[in-house]
Amino acid sequence: MKFAISALTFASLAFAAPAMAQDATGDAAAGERVFNKCQTCHVIADAEGTVLGGRNAKTGPNLYGLPGRAAGSQADFNGYGPDLVALGTSGFTWDEASFVEYVADPAKFLKTRLDNNGARSKMSFKLTNAKEKADVWAYIASLSPAMEPEAEGEAAPAATN
Image 1 (spheres, helix red, strand yellow):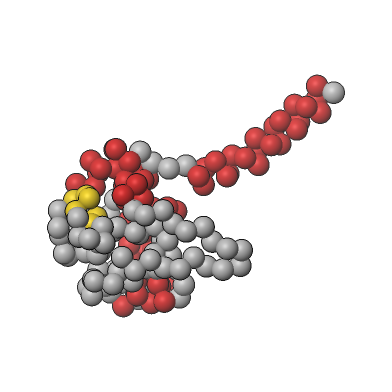
Image 2: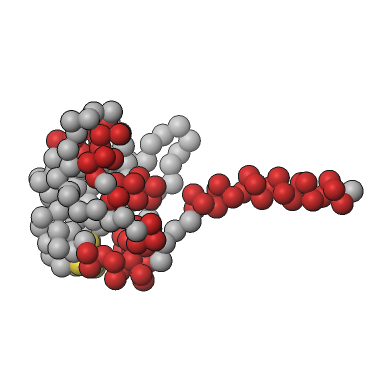
């Protein structure tokens, strides 16, 4: 009986570990400090234009509402490269895992996702520290509206802000 309970406990932990890793989030307070590296190009400003994070930079898109938004679709930003826009029109939306992969090497990310070795990114900055990447995502997510839960079989609508 002890063996059966131990085996069951071990099995449930083994199956739970990947789920816990996927749900792992960074520290939003630490992400606010790391976002100082991003604010040269990006801002987090709500729909009314109130700056919630960073400075009112215009080089890159506003990151408010990034979680769940289609890539290359920020309505009031027209500086996206064609490859990022193509990724977004394919149905791709931002989540923590893809954001973390993207900021590590934006060009490599696009080449892989689009299966196109000629794909380019206008974002040249790379954030390589794993903790910092998770923390920045947590910070952006903490200032963004909550994503709508997806209905089974339907993709969540892309936010336009």
